[in-house]
Length: 116
Image 1 (cartoon, rainbow, N blue to C red):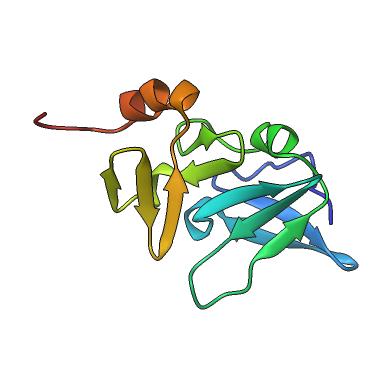
Image 2: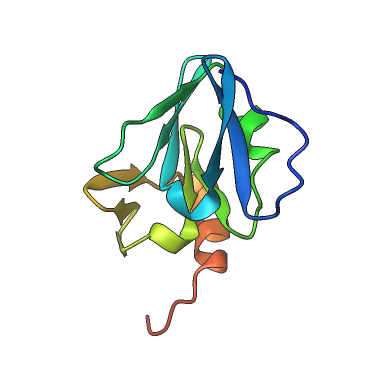
């Protein structure tokens, strides 16, 4: 599966699956996980994950930085789906995603945190 590089629609991405390109709205994508040279794209809990043969760094180039942020060398999350943060872990549905030390300051900067 490959990403179609010319996305003219501002709120979606087209991902190649078999012999066609399927459109996914950014708000449908919950988080992404690296595994070797592959990326797993997690959608709503009742939908199957998508597997792409590319790195997170490559895929991040196609995603808007105001919606998606790298939280760890193995994870990218959709900021709109974060439900809570405890210590160095954030929660998106049932998924527990680690926030790496190098990424924590940048992650917290993108969230509207009140109180201490």
